[in-house]
Length: 343
Ligand code: NAD
Image (cartoon, rainbow, N blue to C red):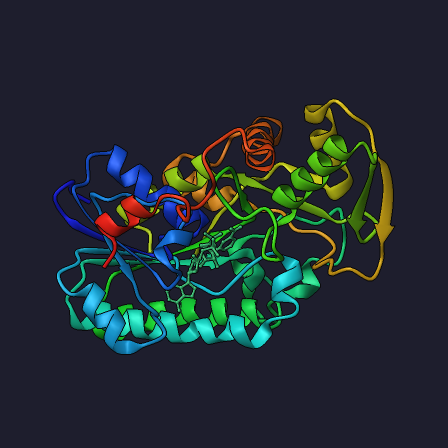
């Protein structure tokens, strides 16, 4: 990508999309187009010097409108959230296929140079993730297909659409399989938050209220790996720029149990909490980790920010939000800036 190329980021009002726009600006890109269906006042990051559009990308006409003239597309828009959301909104998650489909068609019809699709570790077959001491998932483990119901099926289907748009229509596509991305300036409450932000919030609530107890979903022995946003941005840019077009893992391989994640958050907060386990809460698969052999082989790089370091930065940001020590997460309180840049 060249700094005077026109770059379209969909889902730009969300967590990763907001960081991606901020990162592209820092790197000197001057033609950035940011799109999300949320009210611009609710975007996590907003920049008046970027072309900002509030559009529903399930609608084909909107996709065409925002893609016209774009050189590169980062397609991050999706209706999604943590386990608590995707297990209870399977149809909503699958409807994101309208975004993927219409954005791919728009990219083909508008002559986009390259299209990056953000897939997920939820494409991996459930029977490969039944043990907490899971063997890390390698790209071929997505088949035979048995992905996460709803959300994972949509991601796997859209990955294949990218592949066939590439083969049949000559559209260059890239597919990144993110594994649990976390960091500041993202969702930490309301039902769509993911484990790292949810646990930081619960630990902070316990600290501030003096009620030193925490609810943990399941028995806390399920395992995951978590990738800090800086690694996510680096990898996403690298894969967009690189020559590798098959789906590829983009995730940390530092495997922890949810109990260990709570240990880290407690250490940051300087407290110990009584743990109350909720066996009926959504838990997802028993174990999941990213095998990074492919990304290391192709790019000589893999995510490396330690969970202890990334979680500390995330915790501090959520703490400041919850205690009112920092600017609010969204722009709802800054209407003048919104009026200046939204379309
Ligand atoms: P997010 O929910 O913060 O951002 C997604 C954005 O898409 C939201 O702001 C939402 O309003 C927008 N959107 C949804 N439907 C839309 C529509 N019809 N039209 C326009 N915009 C729409 O999520 P995120 O964490 O930033 O994730 C970005 C992408 O990465 C998503 O595709 C997600 O599935 C994928 N992903 C994320 C993770 C993770 O851990 N965060 C893991 C795997 C994959």
